[in-house]
Length: 335
Image (cartoon, rainbow, N blue to C red):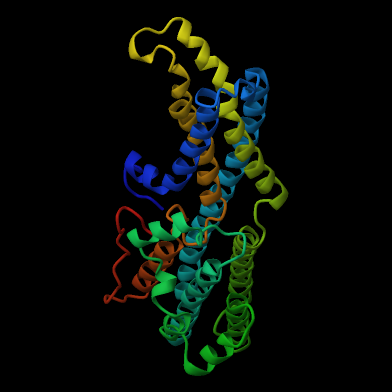
């Protein structure tokens, strides 16, 4: 997540420079053939290009709206996890008589949040972090899940036996919540918590499972591929066709042009078509980078920071003083 005032134009230009190179070439080729080779038949009626551009604009806006909605939902899910974690810390401290059991419940919860965020960072085939432009930009920030192994992080909260069992599980987050349920059941059977508190803690686990399921749905079910690919096809087709539609429009300006531009107005097709096409391709690229809010991109939901906030606040509830610091942004990016 970018926590600064925003991205600079220069950053956008560098991020999209390869598309700019292609767009310049797409503008130069028809202009050279039209002006130098005198292929006047290359021109396409502007009405056709305008209709295609309008349809493409609708498709691009639809995709960006949907992908933005996915990011907003991911933010809501992890804000819910933060709030539910605070509630779990309070009930673990106040409902359970044994301080040892309280510590175990809190530590296991911290392990659950950690395991869940690592699951969210696993790469999927449809994600865009491996694209060259996004991979280059990752040099400006770090992804915490790529810096430290999951085993090392979980070892801070779990004993050796439970750690081994959790690591052997297919869904480690679910395994940890199952252990939580088993533990509070034993505490209830031992008389450590009364039945009404036991029911409340089971409801809290149910809420955590709901948050986990919503987070997994966003991660494992991408924006529909048929819409994503048709968006790309339409934009590319429009970018190829746009210079051909502008040829006669700019050539007609020679009738009113004076000076050294007289007879050469058609060359303005190159910069103008590049700018218009760049707007479309950049919007498509922004939508693609927003589509998967857990992939490790610069615009992701900061789940590692939320994890650290949960750890600090829950350990503070238990009276700990040697608390870890919150994560610091690198180049205004924090994950």
